[in-house]
Image (cartoon, rainbow, N blue to C red; front, side, top):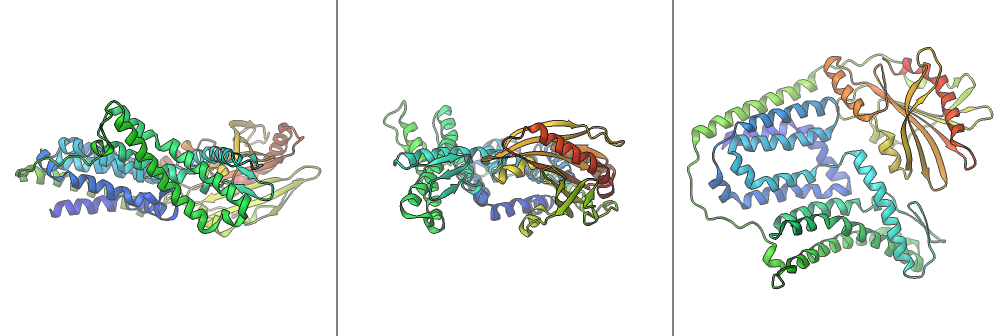
Length: 508
């Protein structure tokens, strides 16, 4: 029907920015390439049951309207707080509300699994992705080294660096195995749905993707190490590296099928995989007249609610934002009492990723003391997805392991800021150790919690039409024989000098 087509277009229009960002992730990030297939599979599973769905149709449910409204509130929160993941989940919630309002509970009960399957198309939030990737890098490195040692090859492991003597293999984020884990987890969920046997067996099928993905990635890293040892470092890259990635994924699928075949025989030895692994049975079809009055009534209200949500999203885009005047970081003083700064530049590809409006990165030196790396990233508007990248998420991506991360009160002893709250983190990479302070200056607030940052972004966008703010980070290297307290003194000393300069460049 025409009204259904209009509702579908409205739904896409309301959530266009969040959906476009999600598709961009599918296209540019290998670990999310499987996202293109998720909606296709979900649509196919729903289409497969079309006859049963026609039988189940009982008219729309008013509960769907409330779910649509909840999706609209989540859209508002996600848009103003620049959290695309909230917008993407708001899309799924609103989609369920639309289906419920149009077709009723019996239809939703029939297709709840294909609808839930759509969750796997949404990228993980950065803090969860980076933490998971970091742990997988370490586990994969350990498994890879274990495989290499089976061939009596001398190898040394330090963090995620595999030292073969003549060549070093670094298990970077791209080799952490998270791409296998993401794809295999979504496939294992689908397999569990199509596996018609006891519930506990379905659960085993679902969770088996995790050990399979980790084991295969460790095996792949081990094989690369063995090939490098006997045939040279060129085998660590190029076609063979890509071929091993593809073969590892295919191997994961085969192992998943073997797990299901084994489970099918437990308790009933004569059963085979084909007996329990199949698409839902199509029910006999008999025509039923859809109640036009009830259908048109629910369609009209759904159309109205989505139209209001579209107007709200367009209003948020068109609503003028207040961007305060400020001094640019290029005029930030290089001489701060006894500290002298040497400026640096960020790489172009990094700037493209950060999408900031202004930045400063410089190493400040004081007499008879080690340098402090000073970084500020300023955003005049954080309403359209550009926002400060927390070091909590970025540092693991650079190979650094976060050893400790706590709230810390720095006694800066100035008139405006006698004490300043920061995140204090000790990070390590190999034998290198660094001490990091970072916090967010959002309008007149100094914040250490990323979730509070998002909340105040939402609140200030709503009440003040402002979303400007900055991330501030101080880093100093800790030598092997140097106690951490010396690093704290160094950062506190520099912070007490620089903190009074901040308000001119990051306005309240």
